[in-house]
Length: 146
Image (cartoon, rainbow, N blue to C red; front, side, top):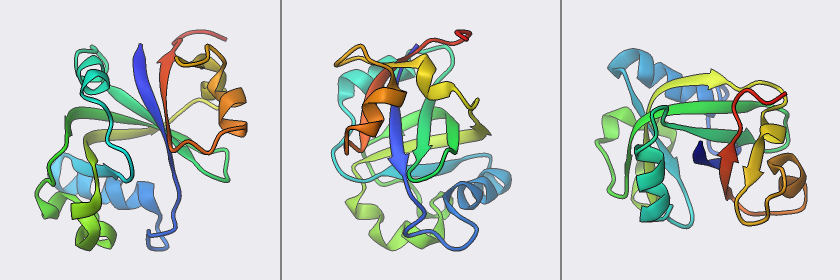
């Protein structure tokens, strides 16, 4: 399955953290919008993810071993309705280039990064991410590999 892996931190988030703040909105509305700052995700990658049976994006919590799957049902380049964006970044929502409509967040398995091959190099995400400051990676996830 082709998708992307995004790095995130809790620098802007309140004490609850990014994941919990998004989960609160998912519980309230059935979805939340997750914003990716920086470079926009390409239309080609957007189409590939959206054509997948299981639409999901991997989140890598920088500086920790926490990894999460965002199960999504839309990717947009336009700022969505503010009510479904966590309050802590509503006022800077206009600077976000890519939005993911998240319907569920789940913790990823501990070895998930070794199951992801970065398409540009063919190396595992676990190796590439150690030596790169890139905020996101295009990956092929090899589900079921041990």
